[in-house]
View 1 (cartoon, rainbow, N blue to C red):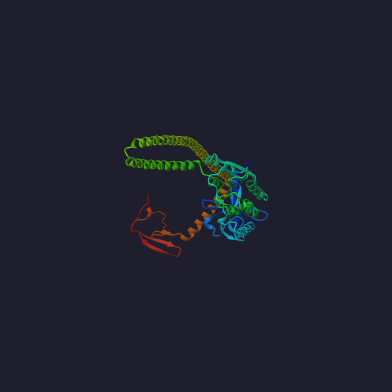
View 2 (cartoon, helix red, strand yellow; view 1 turned 45 degrees about the vertical axis):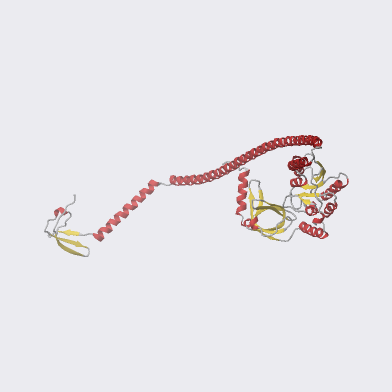
Length: 483
């Protein structure tokens, strides 16, 4: 019989079943240090446990964690080791987590935080005000990461007039803090800007530890230019966040805090223009009332002279007003042009979003097809196992039937039946002989003749019945013949 070949999915399913049947792995306790912590909004917590030599991925539910959970903390986790067949990855599903000491990095972080706080580096009184309308902004970040692209794109959408300068820097590793310090010094001494942004995307506690450097914290505190810290995600906090003049939840949030969008500026200008028009109308009304009062008070002698003077003055003011209205209308025209350009860009952005939704729908379709393919592979695998099982069972049955057939062919049935028949006949003869000896009854007439048939008996005749142990005389009252 040919050997059965299994695909990768079938192999991984088999490995998963083996691991799930191991009684040790079903209830195991592991100690280690938490790293790569990710608290998801679906209620799960994803992390890794590590020691000096190895690491294992793990997950748990937020309802099962009753301790302060962070990167670097040492814990004792109890749960089940499972196997994720799709990626061939083993991980621990923890149902109980207890503290088992704190990580070294987190201890350093807490000590430095307490030290700088006592020195006053975090006090609100030292925070510098972020310029509302900056002309230039300096960004210190990695040019290869996604943070710089997101920040620059958002800057360009919000304000196209503000200059952006980027100081390339490492944002992870032992020398990253030195690069960040050089960036702060560069913008303070060489290329002075209105605001400095220190940015980096998300990462583990170890990845972000470069932003917990004491020298970097003191350099930010000494900066004459306001500094915005945009490190990690909203849940991540570093020393850089506390000592900076402003903390942003994400790098893109820093771009929003550092500038005012052109739409907001246009809205403010539109409000000021409306206030100015209202003020001019009130001034003109006031001047008109004042003119009427003056006209009533002038004498008839210089009335013509004053009227002419006021007429010239009124014409002059009318000219100024017309020029002002033209200028206002021109500003409105420019504003409408800008809004039309914004609406065109808005339409383009919406079309891009529609394309993104279409792409997501395609991804969902691909995933559904992948799920159907996986289910089909599982059915094929079960079919192979059933075929293999039935073939084995059928082969065993055929072998047994062959053995029975061989036994029947080798067995002389006719001779056996003949002997059995002779034995039964012999037993029957002996049985009849014994029966006759035990139960034989002789029936005699009154003359002593033996009666062998009911037709020889007459009604009223006296007959004798001889048994083994005695005899009986009887009178015949009725004779009935068989059909």
